[in-house]
Amino acid sequence: MEFSLGYERIALNSMPCIIRAVTLGMLFMRLIYILIIVATTILAGCSSTDDKPSQDLSEQQIYNRAKEQLKSENYSGAIGSLQLLESRYPFGPYAEQAQLELIYAHYKAYENEAAVEAAARFIRLHPSHPNVDYAYYMKGLANFNADRSVFDRFSKTDKTQRDPGAARDSFNDFSALLSRYPSSEYAADAQMRMIYLRNLLARYEVNVANYYFERRAFLAAANRGRYVVENFQQTPAVSDALAVMVQAYLLLDMPTLANDSLEVLKLNYPESPYLTADGQFNALYTKEGAKQTTLSRLTFGLFGRDEPKVFDSRPPR
Image (cartoon, rainbow, N blue to C red; front, side, top):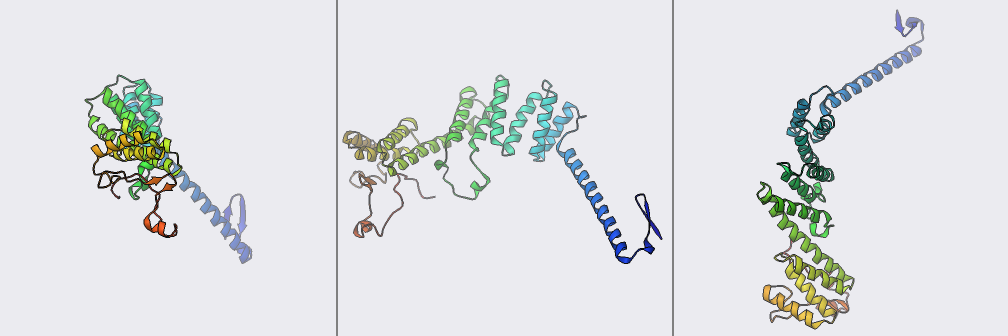
């Protein structure tokens, strides 16, 4: 019996058993290698076909494919299709709509920075487009979610402790939407988000003031409290900001400013936890630092230590 391998003819029955086994093993390994290459090529071809539209497709076909990819939540594929459509048909009838769809695709793919850039680009190129209000809204929405992660829904994180840069940008985006298009279908949602963002930004300033107290930077703390009172009226953080001002001015030996702030606090927030029953200020700090508890004083600081003192009258989460 003979077996042909390439250009050689080998008489298997004349070989020792061990040589025969090695030869068959090499043949088997080559066969597996060829199958792996074929399978990889097929899979790559399928992936390429699914995610990247053919160069032979028309503008409408590419757009329809992108819409199907969005519908099936294949956002990365939709991004590729929409970018291809815009590059091949920049002045076609679907170009502007594709730019709007691209904003949405980036947002749904958690590519918030790309969504913001795409929205800003659309606003710059098409300021008079009938749907430009959507671009303003999506720009604000992408910034609104810029610092959020999938873990936020499973953990109780205090967003007022984070860098407020994206929150400020989002607030400005929604504000631009409301000022330019007050009758937009997105105006109501934008307004609700602005209320949330305003409360968040005010609380952030109070958190910074608390940090300054720990660092004994009392003037900086007072300025933060005053900034909240002047710029974030009607937010829940105002009562804490007034308490910050009273405390800071007392530590700075500015009794007139401290009393003025205390009167405003008593008049507007008589139930503040920083007011005693007889209307006196319940200070958290002395010039030596945070006030000690009674147990801490009796034990010379060995027991009864509290967490760092903060002006935060929000209910426990």
